Length: 326
Image (cartoon, rainbow, N blue to C red; front, side, top):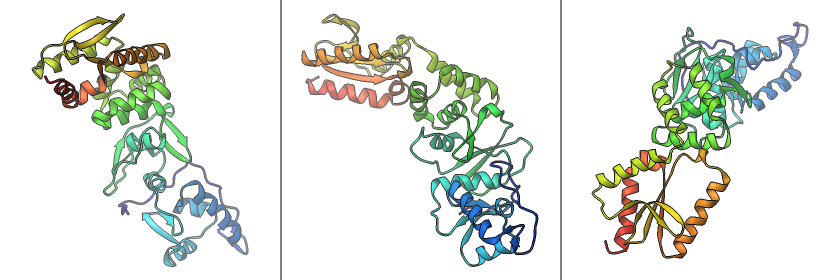
């Protein structure tokens, strides 16, 4: 658990129910049994996590909160943020707790937001949270604060948690993930978000941390020309000292990107997948099947392989050549 260093500033989102006027037999203006129902609703929406401000708004007095902590019904995970003892401190709970601690307009960002949007398989060890520029928030290990005033277009509430919008999330996570980021961006452009939408999010946030790297990613993603990927392959082949290959060999009615004709090895280079259409995909597979039936070995590499895993590319080509005795 991370110990917070500052007092929690009550968030205005999500908006909790305001307490009723206090009267006899009530807990801060609401009957104690009814307050419990509302509290349970908050815990259910937030993976077992609740802030002190939310608990007070739902009808619990300060002394009632203290009793829950003293008896172990609740456990403090940040100052003013609690986890119900009958719930696991799951990844969802962790992100809710961090966001509640960081206060109003706190927005989970980067790879953690990509996980929340189901773009990435795991929550990173360090969670990025974007807060308004003038807000001072200190946290312990496991949380990284980024100060920036996000527009409403770049924030969205998903499952009760405020995270960066999908276009900005895709771009920031791609930068943060380094070599793995290009593949994430490519998949997202295929299935989840349009290139122009991502580009507009980038322009709204120029000058932020990682902005230059994001620009370079977008330039690479926008390139539809196969020649760029082929130039990368030529550079790798020459750098590795491999000989006997040729570019653009015509065989069986198809033009191969690269071929070691004597060894019957074809090397096909794919660009960013989001540029492909269904017919091109099918055509590539038909070509590969015919080549393999004719006794050729077909190796396929993506732009991401060439740019970020060059050693893997050369190792596979060498392995294929070695099986032919060369």
